[in-house]
Length: 181
Image (tube, rainbow, N blue to C red):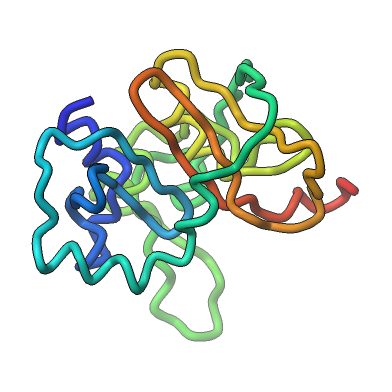
């Protein structure tokens, strides 16, 4: 996996997560809900990256043991929640008593003007729910599997370990959709 591939898992809006970083022989890419790591081609950890050692709360989660279960899910797309399928930004009425919105000429920044997203809001895998966007990104990785520890409590939102050819990923579970227990 190259640095451009890892950048897909970074968070461009967060200054400390917008580019991959090297730590303890691994190259990481992270956002608030997903971390991906692959063996680093660079053996050195920069002083800036070394600061992550104190701030990385998920370090022990990379050592999870258990059965590797291949991930096989079919993602069903959905209407974009921002533009409501119209593909353009919806501008609110300027009258404070009015709750209508009007289409603009600007394409929706979330769906890129297509009006839909290629993944659902959340996806269930082995009894836990994850953001559909994160699973959509992970499914592009070869031989993706989730590690299921023997004592896994699916009611707790601890990071879950996924493996793929050449690396690992941690995902933070989310709450199930309303009405699902």
